[in-house]
Image (cartoon, rainbow, N blue to C red; front, top):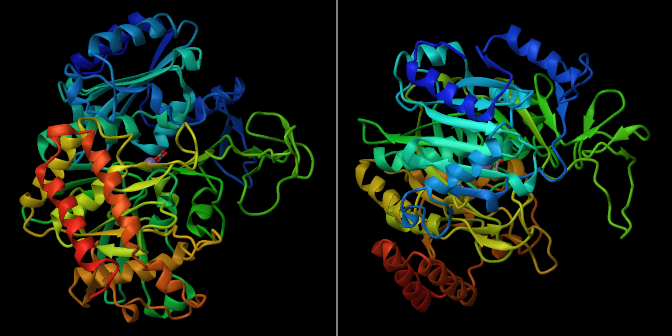
Length: 600
Ligand code: OXD
Ligand code: MN
């Protein structure tokens, strides 16, 4: 048993241990010595593999089970007493059933194993933004990841003192069997139970489970926002820094945008980009009436494939030390590789994410390329490794947000960028976001789904109430950030991307900030304000003839269809949907009728 000064914590650990029956219980103190010991132990059982410590100091490799490589949304539940409080977009189970069903899987599942007790903070310890959790887990991989992703150990216990509030997080690998896997959230009890998985998004309970699902429920009650957003700062040579929070569905390049490098053509302007967060933003209205944000995490859990020196040089730097690589290709010399990464994989002797011998060019029986790394393979890396990491990360009051950006992956509909008319219209723009399904989610890839504020899989309560909460937050602010929508993924008729993306996205962010400062006018369209062509700085960027026109084309017919799709989606929420959003839909239809695709 453990004996911290927090009697409630001790008693809960004891109760969970009685159910799971571990051989041992070990309290994680956050020290390097304990971490090093755990690394050694995990290497001795092959739970992790030590990589070449000269080339990749402090780096390790891990493979998950083959059927356990992404978040399993179909096995993720919100367990509230009333089904309606989980809403139509969440899977629901009653708390009684949740505890019973997961309890049966947990029962005795840690026999022969150690239960680690991981006290952690989401946010700087002591900040008014910060929430605390304790994760119990039978996986050293989880402990090592939590040590990177969150602030762990003694300072957290000090802060909790004798009776501090914390989220009770229980994780067990059990048999890592998909038939016996459940990711359960009990917002009314501030509790998370995850069993039967070893994949990060399902088991690093501080991340999606606490910092989004449980936190969004708390934020609703306590009047703040827990969002699936990156935060980045843009500093001008005069020292002014503006911060942007941006929501994109999983695997739409949030990490790349958060670590953006200014493109050649804009280098003379002398911008410096500061990365505050790449996945989660917690935002509160301060006494100045502005919206302030922190990133509650302390590390990156990024998608490896596609990360290279061109797409994200900062991420390439970030993962050079103290990083855990999961499900990438393992080279025989103790280095790693992934598709669309830097360099070449070993010609001989490499093993793929499933541990099978692998060579470049291998095909399966249907002639389809076998990838060395899983498309959702990951790196877990400390935030401070990132060359552009913001020193304000540890500031207890966070950073002031000037603009909120929503984005989706729309091949044809949405223009490169547009601005909402006001806060309420901005909430409508966020609430109606849609994107294509990606490898980070279990299910059919490529399918378009509506993903309001990129929170569909992460909102821990009824989304209709979440929309109402966003509307109410606008009223609470004296200075509302301006709200925008971007689409980096628009294609031409042949399916080629029209916009180069990556560092070039700064050109769009420049316009966004100019609008926030009232530095330029814009054109009014049926869907929002779009830039005057001369207001996007294209210095040094050659675009094919007509590409910019296509990027800003607004097809009224397609938007009318979109309005029908939105109406259908809104229909799910019945009377609980805020009337202001219904009114916005009607206003959109009216404007489409009056203005069509015109720009005024
Ligand atoms: C993530 C996700 O891992 O959104 O960040 O799936
Ligand atoms: Mn995410």
